[in-house]
Image (cartoon, rainbow, N blue to C red):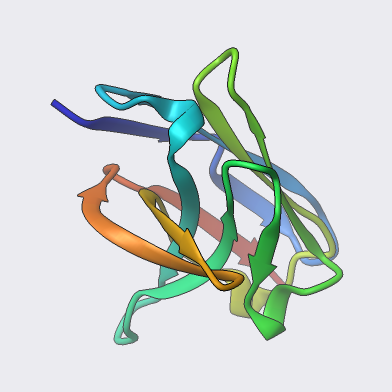
Length: 121
């Protein structure tokens, strides 16, 4: 059974930073690409960042230069370092396990429960 457990969300002022973590179980973590998505109220869920098994990464244009995705295969954990946060980054952030091809991330239908990120202006 695939389980993804996000943590690290919270309330931060604009310009601040947060580090999200996602602990995975029930998968061969080192063999899976991983992704971070977010969903703001009234909006579709969107890809924020993805990371391949080899450490290649892809980012949404809106977060390039501010967010960084990384993974620790020994801990079965993927991270999302978020800097220079903006009010527009407010959303529920979800972890996902998926696939990687041609420099793109493709999600599988396994999601964590999400962690709320709120950015005050």
